[in-house]
Length: 355
Length: 261
Image (cartoon, rainbow over all chains, first blue to last red; front, side):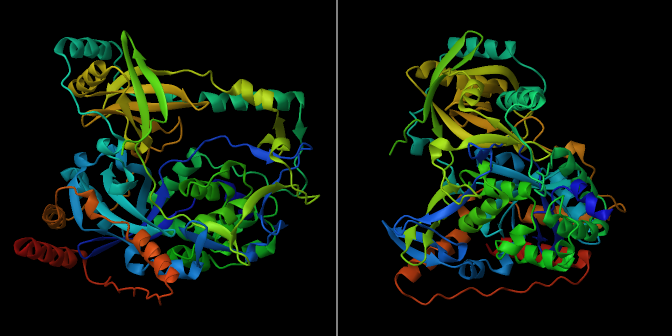
């Protein structure tokens, strides 16, 4: 029965590590605080067969195997320096995998233009005391902690904030990743004419509401696309049935994420082994999840691959992730064409982009 | 050097119209790699291949399909997809104004600057009015055949549009329950508060460098010059000792640093 439970496992933690606050170490796990609901389309042949992305050498005009491909940095036009996974891994020392809170600032001082993505931090060890202490203190003092850390081969600048007794990490764009008005070339500000400012204020007041109605954030384009798909499905128009044995698309929505977060916040350590075990089982996809081979790797190997951080881009590690998780990662890495990629393609693209 | 506007439009609500130019405010600085054919160092080309025939399918022949939860594919033709495209428009329609606190930054996606396009007077009047009222607008617009929702805000002396995540994508902290446990020790809360205060500083984001990016760039340049590359060592961390003792020692160290700094 356990094999079929993987569907409700949902997303797993992105990262586990330690917040250091002075000399106090707080083990934490990191989960995304949002999940893309974007509708993605697959690329198919005119006969409906899903296409696969392949790499070709334009010079030899031949298809390449993955082991014939290396990663290169363009040092000057058409001249590349090859960089290996092992080298990149060595550049991310253990220390930077801690979130070292050395500076606290007024949470209000943070410029919203720097915020990128939000993650929830849940207690990772057996004790929640230090976690709760930090959350309570930060919330009461309305401070945000600023730090850098390395996750999945990339250094992040983060602001740690506390809300409702829960710690959240917001990844932030580095100072040089947000343009200034001068960079953009905006004109020098002028003082508004009082009469005109009054008129605009009146118009603002006329349209003011007290709270956000989430319906206003609805993705109408996606809704229409899904409606069209439903209509065609009902009529059986242009429907290509799934080939037998093809693993179905995992649907991990925000509901699942919320469940996982709730579980992780309450008694993280009790649940983590169970989650880990199921995660491994989930590797084979829903329909072939019964295969014994899929259960083989010990839960600890998953954990350590995750801990090592730098090496996470190994194929075996990526294979253990669901397609949705890979998609999320691809999104973070800004991989173009990700919405139409298969799982294998996502893995290849992530390995490529992991700079 | 002034950036080029990526789009032009007009903010509209009630009787207010503000023509604006839109600029990307975020610029990704991470290191990008190309995939190369190892043998001849030629950047690889990606192509879509039919898995059964092994033949390349030309871009013009590629069709789009939606995969249902059962794995069935529903094919959509170009006309159907074109019909779904939102009508082209130059309007940035503001549907509501909210307190600037109402949309938490978990919703934020990408920031864009708006600059005046021919009517600076109304542009800066809008900046001032938003600031005075402490409000931001919920905006909807169509750019490059895609519909966006965003928050129209005053940021410093200028207007920004922050694109927002979509309905149902964000888990708010209010929907979750904080971890429980025995009540916190007052002395520890007190010390933690003092430690936060001791570590408090003015925000200076420029002080934080993407050191990993620096190291990657250093590595590629060193390799380009044929130098031997040294890798940093990983320091150890002490995890034993009681929470209270650690807080006390941290506090002492932070105070000392402050006094000498």
